[in-house]
Amino acid sequence: MTDAAEFDRDHLWHPYTNVTKPGPTFMVDRADGAWITLDDGTRMIDAMSSWWCTIHGHRHPAITAAMKDQIDRLPHVMFGGLTHEPAVELGRRLVAMTPAGLDRVFYCDSGSVAIEVAMKMAVQHQLAAGFPGRSRFATIRGGYHGDTWKAMSVCDPVNGMHHLFEGSLNIQYFAPRPPVTLDEGWPEDDEANGTAALLRLLHEHGDQIAALVLEPVVQGAGGMRFYHPEYLRRARRLCDEMGILLIFDEIATGFGRTGHLFAADLAGVTPDIMCLGKALTGGHISFASVMASSHVAETIGGGDPGLFMHGPTFMGNPLACAAACASLDLLADGTWRGRVAEIAAQMQAELAPARDLPGVADVRVLGAIAVIEMDHSVSADEAHPISRETGVWLRPFGRNIYAMPPFILAPDEVSRVSAAMLRLARTL
Ligand SMILES: *Cc1c(COP(=O)(O)O)cnc(C)c1O
Image 1 (cartoon, rainbow, N blue to C red):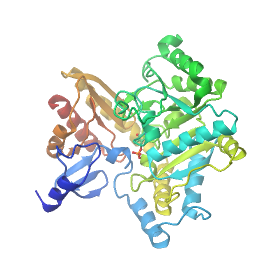
Image 2: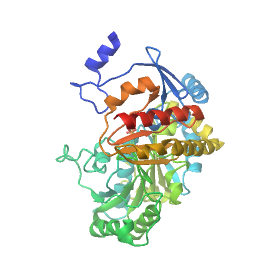
Image 3: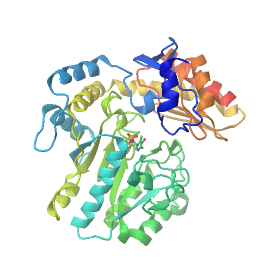
Image 4: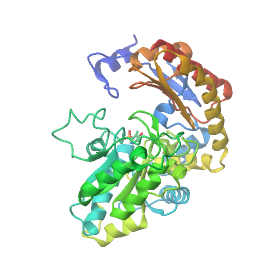
């Protein structure tokens, strides 16, 4: 073990790890496109897009050039009372590309903070609209919205750490998971399609609920499940009828991951507030954005105190805005659509044999999201040594062996990812 690896093991905390039982942790030296290279020269395809962010691959020349240019001009400046071109340019792009009506942009640092901001907006909106009792939130089981307190309170209550933090978490209202999957027919019976349960929840607690928070179509870190977009259209209608805001968490799904620019586009629904993160900068630097309707923004502005009470130190960071503009420009020509569709078709075909393996519960693909769900939990620590051998970096969680590859993978690279997933399904 090198000195650096030893220091890492003895001193550095990694995400969701036990410092007394460190798992295998590899030292990364560099990354090029879809590939990461370890300090011993081992090369692996980053089939996770480094937690779903590097949609154009690592170190994309257009993005790094934009960042280098920006770093020489203005890496950071406070956003209170000052603005700059990268922030304006990014805002233009986001307003134009997100569902019509989301005209107000609030920049922040990470996905979890975006969720905090969105939830705060909803509470301030309800206060300003004359509903001070509406300070809680409704959501569905199986969700994941981040690791900060308010975000955690709307994560799945069973696998979302609620029992650990019971005394500290806000109590929110949970509807059952939407029961109809994306590729099933939509039953007209509201008990069968899950909207009756949502309706009951909203009716029972509506006078306390500021907003309904949903990951549209794809529930990511809560279980990698795909549900029917009709559920979102019905949720939109219910929220409108009851004066409840609708918040979409597109942090995982935004920017083409599902084969659509946003998962909201699958349903043709515009939420009142939408959170963006992860792939926003093409995975080059942390950044997030909360998009709100003019109605929400103006209601808050017309209330007391009128100010929206949030403003992080690094809000609107120019370097991150420049990276995001460059990443969105790469999406602008639309070629990603064909690539994502090809990746989806290829992985669908190549992963089909997994259905016959013992221990496999389900296989599903949507856009550049491919999942082999096992009937038992799988260990990332056991997967990692296999990644070294297959040359494909995968980090399974829960019962899911999954890939969210960058959109730039060539067909032979996609095949390597599929083969590595099949090997993990046979081994873990
Ligand atoms: C990753 C994720 C978050 C949290 O984002 P961070 O940048 O990790 O704080 C929130 N919601 C969803 C759907 C996510 O996938």
